[in-house]
Length: 212
Length: 212
DNA sequence: CGGACGGTCAACAGTGCGTTGATTTTTCTC
DNA sequence: GAGAAAAATCAACGCACTGTTGACCGTCCG
Image 1 (cartoon, helix red, strand yellow):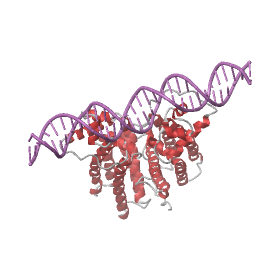
Image 2 (spheres, chains in turn blue, green, purple, cyan):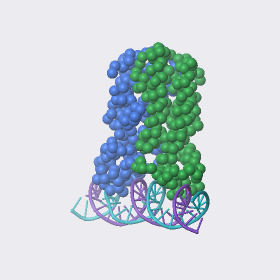
Image 3 (cartoon, chains in turn red, blue, cyan, orange):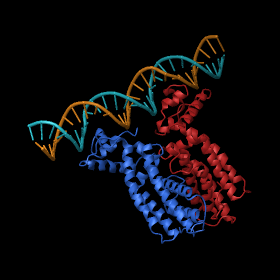
């Protein structure tokens, strides 16, 4: 729990055990929170004993970190696509980006849920997650700035500030939806509602009510 | 941890010890997360031994629940004021409500932070926090519906859905701000930015950029 | 005075984490 | 394919923290 120095040297052959631990963790996260998962379960799932687990990972939060870092790469790649195509309308671009995020949450809900539950109180995870969020914020802020300077979007709050609020809104809404929290957006209204808020916040225009 | 039945009978005289536990917990939450606080610290802070702690509370999460429930009452009272006065402009009403929430977070940051960190993975807290959020959502949704039916606000996403997203956005932005997360809204931009997003999302009108 | 009840704690039992050190298995080299 | 170095494994241990048991003390009331 003390963000210690590097663990033992990295193996290269028997790291399919490492994979086994990761996939076991991902599977178990579908059922319960990280705090309810024991190191022994992770070890058992990978067919090794508890002490052997520590040969591969420092702790169970290190396992989650590895899982999240792997996902982060996927997410960045996915998000690139909203900066690339500048030919589409704002409605399509925003809607598609948010839809892509929704897709990630659908595919990797358990891991993302665990990440969100953990980053606030575990420094190791916090750095990773803040990094993920920061990239999305920077991307969005840059886009907003562009849209304003070319006249497509009217002035408003600082692009950076606006982007921070909107990205955190998405994080929270995807999380609560994935968790099945009681006040949470249903699957059908998730993307349309978030899209509408983004569009109105950035472009301050009344958009056609998203079709059901 | 198993949401057991009622604890020992409630005392009425020496419940200033109970208070002592609560205030100790609140104080310690200023320094560290709940998971890093031991029952022994809570007991020591109240001048009793560890087993005695269990005379007053089932667990340390029960302490947090008590703390949050007490706060919830304050927050409801505070929030009433945005439904009562219908004479002010939307700008003033929304801004004042969000400012009131910001005030709560300034005064009770540690407890609210702990609540947000905990509710997602601890059923006991989850019910309490979902209740708090639900009330805010219902209030906001009702208000949006009113504003639309009297023509002050144009049509848009389902009022309920819109309110959910906006309330969760606030929760997350106040939390990240209070935590000092890296991508987070600074104190000065917190209320103005959130206000701008609420106004644009509900009224779809360009509002004067909030003064710096 | 006696016992009922609010309040207290020493001692115990359990669980889960992370480490040590000796041991087995793999791998690489000659 | 012998033999040393590195990779991988685990029994046994110590520790930190949680929650419980059962006996104990005061005091208020009949």
